[in-house]
Image 1 (spheres, rainbow, N blue to C red):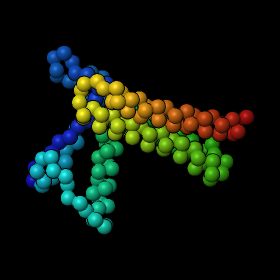
Image 2: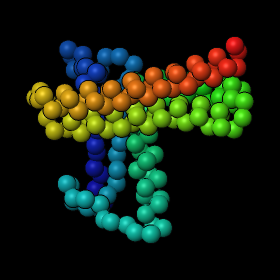
Image 3: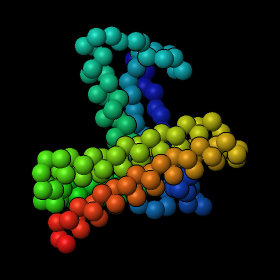
Amino acid sequence: MQEVRGSIPRSSTKSNPEGSAPRGFFMPTVIAMKTSEQPGQLPPRRRGWRRLPWALRYSWRGLRVAWGEPAFFLEALLALCMLPAAFWLGRDWVQVAVLLGSVVLVLVAELLNTAVEAVVDRIGDEWHVLSGQAKDLGSAAVLLTLLFCGGVWGAALWVRLG
């Protein structure tokens, strides 16, 4: 078996002039995957129930990579505080579900934005207008979900405390 390594380039994490370690709190995440295929070859297609453990493994690896992203890390920490608060703030199960859903929606948007940025960064380092637009659109999606989440939580607080 051969070990294949992949990483998501970080434009926000810059190396020291000496090249020893990146500046800042977060270091680039490198996730190793054991595979029997040749480098550059797609993994075999799995069908039925055998696919489920592999899908869970890929999803867990994606969450580990996202945890190293500063924006996702901050939003996940806020979500850990907000999710229990949703049960206090919501008056019935529908309100709790909307509060929880708005928080989860922010995390999903951040995951998709990180995926878009990783794909764009993998294509090349040179600047292109379409690459900039793709990153800006992903960022705008995160902004809209943050505004939606803030509006939902603000309205729930208004009803509960006002």
